[in-house]
Length: 382
Image (cartoon, rainbow, N blue to C red; front, side):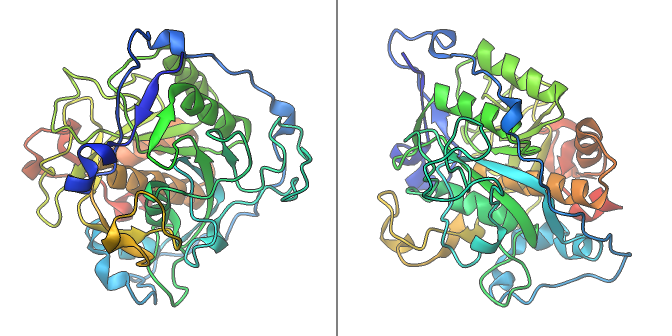
Protein backbone atom coordinates (compact mmCIF):
# COMPACT_ATOMS: atom_id res chain seq x y z
CA UNK A 1 0.00 0.00 0.00
CA UNK A 2 1.26 3.48 -0.81
CA UNK A 3 1.28 6.37 1.59
CA UNK A 4 -0.83 9.15 0.12
CA UNK A 5 0.55 12.69 0.10
CA UNK A 6 -1.36 15.70 -1.13
CA UNK A 7 -1.26 19.40 -1.80
CA UNK A 8 -3.71 21.40 0.37
CA UNK A 9 -5.76 22.74 -2.54
CA UNK A 10 -8.71 20.67 -1.31
CA UNK A 11 -8.47 22.10 2.18
CA UNK A 12 -6.46 25.22 2.88
CA UNK A 13 -4.80 26.23 -0.35
CA UNK A 14 -7.64 27.81 -2.23
CA UNK A 15 -8.58 29.85 0.81
CA UNK A 16 -5.03 30.87 1.75
CA UNK A 17 -3.37 30.66 -1.68
CA UNK A 18 -0.71 28.56 0.02
CA UNK A 19 0.77 25.75 -2.00
CA UNK A 20 2.82 23.70 0.41
CA UNK A 21 1.45 20.17 0.64
CA UNK A 22 0.23 18.53 3.77
CA UNK A 23 -0.06 14.78 4.06
CA UNK A 24 -2.34 11.99 5.06
CA UNK A 25 -1.60 8.30 5.56
CA UNK A 26 -4.02 5.78 4.14
CA UNK A 27 -5.96 3.97 6.83
CA UNK A 28 -4.03 1.05 8.25
CA UNK A 29 -0.89 1.93 6.29
CA UNK A 30 2.41 2.27 8.12
CA UNK A 31 4.68 4.92 6.57
CA UNK A 32 7.62 2.57 6.24
CA UNK A 33 5.44 -0.21 4.81
CA UNK A 34 4.59 2.15 1.95
CA UNK A 35 8.20 2.59 0.88
CA UNK A 36 10.31 0.56 -1.45
CA UNK A 37 13.90 1.74 -1.63
CA UNK A 38 14.70 2.19 -5.32
CA UNK A 39 17.81 0.85 -7.01
CA UNK A 40 20.43 3.13 -8.51
CA UNK A 41 21.56 2.88 -12.13
CA UNK A 42 24.53 5.22 -12.49
CA UNK A 43 25.56 4.08 -15.95
CA UNK A 44 22.85 6.13 -17.61
CA UNK A 45 23.84 9.48 -16.13
CA UNK A 46 24.49 11.95 -18.96
CA UNK A 47 28.09 13.09 -19.10
CA UNK A 48 27.37 16.27 -21.07
CA UNK A 49 27.15 19.45 -19.00
CA UNK A 50 26.92 23.07 -20.11
CA UNK A 51 30.22 24.96 -20.08
CA UNK A 52 30.68 27.26 -17.08
CA UNK A 53 29.80 30.88 -17.75
CA UNK A 54 32.56 33.42 -17.11
CA UNK A 55 32.33 34.99 -13.67
CA UNK A 56 31.30 38.62 -13.63
CA UNK A 57 33.30 41.28 -11.86
CA UNK A 58 31.35 43.17 -9.18
CA UNK A 59 29.21 45.84 -10.80
CA UNK A 60 26.30 48.05 -9.86
CA UNK A 61 22.84 46.59 -9.36
CA UNK A 62 21.35 45.00 -12.45
CA UNK A 63 17.67 45.34 -13.27
CA UNK A 64 16.20 43.07 -15.96
CA UNK A 65 14.11 44.43 -18.80
CA UNK A 66 11.22 42.06 -18.09
CA UNK A 67 8.10 44.25 -18.14
CA UNK A 68 6.50 42.65 -15.06
CA UNK A 69 9.60 42.80 -12.89
CA UNK A 70 7.95 45.69 -11.04
CA UNK A 71 5.50 43.16 -9.56
CA UNK A 72 8.33 41.10 -8.04
CA UNK A 73 8.86 42.78 -4.69
CA UNK A 74 10.01 39.40 -3.40
CA UNK A 75 13.18 39.60 -5.51
CA UNK A 76 13.95 43.16 -4.50
CA UNK A 77 13.43 42.24 -0.84
CA UNK A 78 15.89 39.36 -1.23
CA UNK A 79 18.52 41.72 -2.75
CA UNK A 80 18.38 40.06 -6.16
CA UNK A 81 19.35 43.16 -8.22
CA UNK A 82 22.51 43.50 -6.10
CA UNK A 83 23.32 39.80 -6.57
CA UNK A 84 22.77 40.07 -10.33
CA UNK A 85 25.68 42.49 -10.49
CA UNK A 86 27.81 39.40 -9.78
CA UNK A 87 25.94 36.46 -11.32
CA UNK A 88 22.80 35.85 -13.35
CA UNK A 89 23.52 32.49 -14.99
CA UNK A 90 22.74 29.14 -13.33
CA UNK A 91 22.58 26.93 -16.39
CA UNK A 92 25.38 24.61 -15.33
CA UNK A 93 23.58 23.65 -12.08
CA UNK A 94 20.49 21.56 -12.76
CA UNK A 95 17.59 22.31 -10.42
CA UNK A 96 15.04 19.52 -10.02
CA UNK A 97 11.49 20.70 -9.34
CA UNK A 98 9.92 17.69 -7.63
CA UNK A 99 6.30 18.68 -8.01
CA UNK A 100 3.30 18.61 -10.39
CA UNK A 101 5.41 19.17 -13.50
CA UNK A 102 6.27 22.37 -15.36
CA UNK A 103 4.46 24.03 -18.26
CA UNK A 104 6.79 22.93 -21.07
CA UNK A 105 5.51 25.59 -23.47
CA UNK A 106 5.44 28.65 -21.23
CA UNK A 107 7.30 31.42 -23.10
CA UNK A 108 9.11 32.51 -19.94
CA UNK A 109 10.26 28.97 -19.07
CA UNK A 110 10.83 27.09 -22.31
CA UNK A 111 14.36 28.41 -22.86
CA UNK A 112 15.41 27.43 -19.34
CA UNK A 113 14.20 23.81 -19.39
CA UNK A 114 16.91 21.17 -19.11
CA UNK A 115 17.09 18.87 -22.10
CA UNK A 116 18.63 15.42 -21.88
CA UNK A 117 21.28 15.37 -24.63
CA UNK A 118 21.10 11.58 -24.92
CA UNK A 119 17.36 11.32 -25.52
CA UNK A 120 14.98 12.05 -28.40
CA UNK A 121 11.37 12.93 -27.70
CA UNK A 122 8.81 10.48 -29.08
CA UNK A 123 11.44 7.90 -29.95
CA UNK A 124 10.34 5.41 -27.33
CA UNK A 125 13.99 4.50 -26.86
CA UNK A 126 16.04 4.78 -23.70
CA UNK A 127 19.03 6.58 -25.13
CA UNK A 128 20.94 6.96 -21.88
CA UNK A 129 20.06 3.56 -20.44
CA UNK A 130 18.62 4.93 -17.21
CA UNK A 131 15.39 2.92 -17.36
CA UNK A 132 13.26 5.92 -18.45
CA UNK A 133 12.68 6.02 -22.19
CA UNK A 134 12.83 9.39 -23.95
CA UNK A 135 13.11 11.42 -20.73
CA UNK A 136 14.00 14.61 -22.58
CA UNK A 137 12.61 16.89 -19.87
CA UNK A 138 12.63 14.80 -16.69
CA UNK A 139 10.20 12.03 -15.81
CA UNK A 140 6.56 11.60 -14.80
CA UNK A 141 6.37 9.12 -11.92
CA UNK A 142 2.60 9.50 -11.68
CA UNK A 143 1.99 8.24 -15.21
CA UNK A 144 5.27 6.32 -15.62
CA UNK A 145 6.08 8.23 -18.80
CA UNK A 146 8.11 11.13 -20.15
CA UNK A 147 5.24 13.66 -20.13
CA UNK A 148 6.18 16.15 -17.42
CA UNK A 149 3.67 18.83 -18.46
CA UNK A 150 2.11 20.53 -15.42
CA UNK A 151 -1.59 19.67 -15.16
CA UNK A 152 -2.04 21.51 -11.84
CA UNK A 153 -0.13 24.83 -11.64
CA UNK A 154 1.96 24.46 -8.50
CA UNK A 155 5.13 23.25 -10.20
CA UNK A 156 5.02 25.95 -12.87
CA UNK A 157 4.76 28.68 -10.24
CA UNK A 158 7.68 27.20 -8.30
CA UNK A 159 9.76 26.90 -11.47
CA UNK A 160 9.23 30.54 -12.39
CA UNK A 161 10.62 31.69 -9.05
CA UNK A 162 13.78 29.71 -9.68
CA UNK A 163 14.30 30.32 -13.34
CA UNK A 164 11.85 32.30 -15.43
CA UNK A 165 13.99 33.70 -18.25
CA UNK A 166 15.46 37.00 -17.09
CA UNK A 167 16.19 40.07 -19.19
CA UNK A 168 14.27 38.64 -22.17
CA UNK A 169 11.83 41.57 -22.58
CA UNK A 170 8.80 39.53 -21.54
CA UNK A 171 7.00 38.53 -18.38
CA UNK A 172 9.03 38.23 -15.21
CA UNK A 173 12.52 37.26 -14.12
CA UNK A 174 13.57 34.26 -12.11
CA UNK A 175 16.39 34.49 -9.60
CA UNK A 176 18.38 32.60 -12.24
CA UNK A 177 18.11 34.50 -15.54
CA UNK A 178 19.33 31.40 -17.36
CA UNK A 179 18.77 28.02 -15.76
CA UNK A 180 18.47 24.25 -16.19
CA UNK A 181 15.02 23.48 -14.77
CA UNK A 182 14.10 19.80 -14.54
CA UNK A 183 10.46 18.81 -13.98
CA UNK A 184 10.10 15.63 -11.94
CA UNK A 185 6.39 14.94 -11.70
CA UNK A 186 5.38 13.12 -8.51
CA UNK A 187 1.98 14.81 -7.97
CA UNK A 188 -1.12 14.50 -10.14
CA UNK A 189 -3.58 17.08 -11.45
CA UNK A 190 -5.33 17.25 -8.07
CA UNK A 191 -2.06 17.80 -6.24
CA UNK A 192 -2.05 14.28 -4.82
CA UNK A 193 0.90 11.93 -4.87
CA UNK A 194 2.18 8.62 -3.57
CA UNK A 195 5.14 8.43 -1.21
CA UNK A 196 6.74 5.86 -3.51
CA UNK A 197 6.67 8.33 -6.43
CA UNK A 198 8.37 10.99 -4.31
CA UNK A 199 11.10 8.55 -3.31
CA UNK A 200 11.55 7.45 -6.91
CA UNK A 201 11.73 11.10 -7.94
CA UNK A 202 14.48 11.82 -5.42
CA UNK A 203 16.40 8.80 -6.61
CA UNK A 204 15.99 9.85 -10.25
CA UNK A 205 17.34 13.31 -9.42
CA UNK A 206 20.46 11.75 -7.95
CA UNK A 207 20.78 9.26 -10.78
CA UNK A 208 20.73 12.12 -13.30
CA UNK A 209 23.04 14.40 -11.26
CA UNK A 210 20.54 17.17 -10.53
CA UNK A 211 22.52 18.82 -7.74
CA UNK A 212 19.74 21.00 -6.27
CA UNK A 213 16.31 19.52 -5.53
CA UNK A 214 13.37 21.73 -4.56
CA UNK A 215 10.78 20.00 -2.37
CA UNK A 216 7.76 22.26 -1.94
CA UNK A 217 5.67 19.61 -0.20
CA UNK A 218 5.36 18.01 3.19
CA UNK A 219 3.95 15.20 5.29
CA UNK A 220 3.46 14.63 8.99
CA UNK A 221 4.46 10.99 8.63
CA UNK A 222 8.03 9.88 9.18
CA UNK A 223 9.53 7.47 6.65
CA UNK A 224 12.73 5.67 7.54
CA UNK A 225 13.22 4.74 3.91
CA UNK A 226 13.07 8.36 2.79
CA UNK A 227 15.43 9.46 5.54
CA UNK A 228 17.94 6.78 4.54
CA UNK A 229 17.71 7.88 0.93
CA UNK A 230 18.17 11.54 1.88
CA UNK A 231 21.25 10.62 3.91
CA UNK A 232 22.59 8.75 0.90
CA UNK A 233 21.94 11.78 -1.29
CA UNK A 234 23.75 13.92 1.26
CA UNK A 235 26.79 11.66 1.11
CA UNK A 236 26.74 12.04 -2.67
CA UNK A 237 26.53 15.84 -2.54
CA UNK A 238 22.90 16.62 -3.40
CA UNK A 239 21.19 19.59 -1.73
CA UNK A 240 17.47 19.32 -0.87
CA UNK A 241 15.60 22.55 -0.15
CA UNK A 242 12.25 21.92 1.54
CA UNK A 243 9.23 24.01 2.45
CA UNK A 244 8.70 24.16 6.23
CA UNK A 245 4.91 23.88 5.96
CA UNK A 246 1.82 26.08 6.13
CA UNK A 247 0.18 24.94 9.37
CA UNK A 248 1.43 27.80 11.60
CA UNK A 249 2.90 25.11 13.82
CA UNK A 250 6.21 24.48 15.55
CA UNK A 251 8.26 21.96 13.58
CA UNK A 252 10.35 21.30 16.70
CA UNK A 253 7.38 19.55 18.28
CA UNK A 254 5.24 18.61 15.27
CA UNK A 255 7.50 17.58 12.42
CA UNK A 256 6.83 18.32 8.76
CA UNK A 257 8.81 16.06 6.44
CA UNK A 258 11.04 16.22 4.44
CA UNK A 259 11.90 19.61 5.98
CA UNK A 260 12.22 18.04 9.45
CA UNK A 261 14.57 15.21 8.55
CA UNK A 262 17.94 15.62 10.22
CA UNK A 263 19.87 14.89 7.04
CA UNK A 264 22.89 17.18 6.53
CA UNK A 265 21.73 18.21 3.05
CA UNK A 266 18.30 19.56 4.05
CA UNK A 267 17.53 23.27 4.21
CA UNK A 268 14.13 23.94 5.81
CA UNK A 269 12.55 27.21 4.63
CA UNK A 270 9.89 29.34 6.31
CA UNK A 271 7.89 32.09 4.59
CA UNK A 272 8.03 35.81 5.26
CA UNK A 273 4.99 38.01 5.07
CA UNK A 274 5.05 40.54 2.26
CA UNK A 275 7.28 43.52 3.02
CA UNK A 276 7.15 43.33 6.84
CA UNK A 277 10.21 41.23 7.64
CA UNK A 278 8.03 39.12 9.91
CA UNK A 279 7.11 35.47 9.61
CA UNK A 280 3.95 34.88 7.60
CA UNK A 281 0.99 33.96 9.77
CA UNK A 282 0.58 30.57 8.08
CA UNK A 283 4.25 29.56 8.09
CA UNK A 284 5.60 26.78 10.24
CA UNK A 285 8.47 27.80 12.50
CA UNK A 286 10.99 26.50 15.02
CA UNK A 287 14.69 26.11 15.66
CA UNK A 288 14.71 23.18 13.23
CA UNK A 289 13.71 25.64 10.48
CA UNK A 290 16.91 26.98 8.94
CA UNK A 291 16.00 30.20 7.14
CA UNK A 292 13.11 32.38 6.01
CA UNK A 293 12.56 33.72 2.50
CA UNK A 294 9.83 35.66 0.68
CA UNK A 295 6.72 33.52 0.41
CA UNK A 296 3.70 35.82 0.46
CA UNK A 297 2.13 37.37 -2.64
CA UNK A 298 4.87 36.04 -4.89
CA UNK A 299 4.27 36.77 -8.57
CA UNK A 300 5.35 33.96 -10.88
CA UNK A 301 4.45 31.84 -13.88
CA UNK A 302 1.25 29.83 -14.31
CA UNK A 303 0.43 27.27 -17.02
CA UNK A 304 -0.65 28.78 -20.32
CA UNK A 305 -3.30 26.07 -20.66
CA UNK A 306 -6.17 25.79 -18.20
CA UNK A 307 -5.75 22.98 -15.69
CA UNK A 308 -8.41 21.38 -13.45
CA UNK A 309 -7.13 23.13 -10.34
CA UNK A 310 -7.04 26.64 -11.82
CA UNK A 311 -9.95 28.71 -10.55
CA UNK A 312 -11.44 31.39 -12.79
CA UNK A 313 -9.06 34.18 -11.79
CA UNK A 314 -6.01 32.16 -12.84
CA UNK A 315 -7.24 30.95 -16.23
CA UNK A 316 -5.44 32.56 -19.13
CA UNK A 317 -3.38 34.77 -16.85
CA UNK A 318 0.00 33.00 -17.45
CA UNK A 319 1.28 34.77 -14.29
CA UNK A 320 -0.21 35.50 -10.87
CA UNK A 321 0.39 35.84 -7.14
CA UNK A 322 0.50 32.84 -4.82
CA UNK A 323 1.60 32.50 -1.21
CA UNK A 324 3.07 29.75 0.93
CA UNK A 325 6.27 28.17 2.11
CA UNK A 326 6.11 26.43 -1.28
CA UNK A 327 6.98 29.81 -2.74
CA UNK A 328 9.70 30.51 -0.15
CA UNK A 329 11.59 27.27 -0.77
CA UNK A 330 12.46 27.91 -4.46
CA UNK A 331 14.03 31.26 -3.52
CA UNK A 332 16.62 29.32 -1.53
CA UNK A 333 16.96 26.57 -4.14
CA UNK A 334 17.68 29.24 -6.75
CA UNK A 335 20.15 30.93 -4.42
CA UNK A 336 22.01 27.63 -4.16
CA UNK A 337 22.15 27.29 -7.94
CA UNK A 338 23.30 30.89 -8.30
CA UNK A 339 26.05 30.44 -5.71
CA UNK A 340 27.18 27.07 -7.09
CA UNK A 341 27.41 28.62 -10.55
CA UNK A 342 29.34 31.59 -9.19
CA UNK A 343 31.83 29.42 -7.32
CA UNK A 344 32.07 25.96 -8.85
CA UNK A 345 34.75 24.91 -6.36
CA UNK A 346 32.25 24.65 -3.50
CA UNK A 347 30.89 21.32 -2.34
CA UNK A 348 27.30 20.80 -1.21
CA UNK A 349 27.94 21.34 2.49
CA UNK A 350 29.87 24.52 1.73
CA UNK A 351 26.98 25.80 -0.39
CA UNK A 352 24.54 25.01 2.40
CA UNK A 353 26.72 26.71 5.03
CA UNK A 354 27.21 29.78 2.87
CA UNK A 355 23.47 30.22 2.35
CA UNK A 356 22.90 30.15 6.10
CA UNK A 357 26.03 31.96 7.29
CA UNK A 358 25.48 34.86 4.89
CA UNK A 359 21.83 35.35 5.76
CA UNK A 360 20.55 38.56 7.27
CA UNK A 361 19.73 38.44 10.97
CA UNK A 362 16.20 39.78 11.40
CA UNK A 363 15.11 40.38 14.98
CA UNK A 364 11.59 40.84 13.61
CA UNK A 365 11.45 37.04 13.37
CA UNK A 366 11.51 36.83 17.17
CA UNK A 367 13.57 33.63 17.17
CA UNK A 368 10.89 31.77 15.23
CA UNK A 369 13.58 30.59 12.81
CA UNK A 370 17.05 29.36 13.73
CA UNK A 371 19.40 32.32 14.04
CA UNK A 372 16.63 34.68 12.84
CA UNK A 373 18.00 34.03 9.35
CA UNK A 374 16.54 35.69 6.26
CA UNK A 375 17.81 35.00 2.75
CA UNK A 376 20.06 37.71 1.27
CA UNK A 377 21.10 36.90 -2.29
CA UNK A 378 23.76 39.62 -2.43
CA UNK A 379 25.57 38.47 0.70
CA UNK A 380 25.53 34.86 -0.48
CA UNK A 381 27.74 35.83 -3.43
CA UNK A 382 30.06 38.24 -1.64
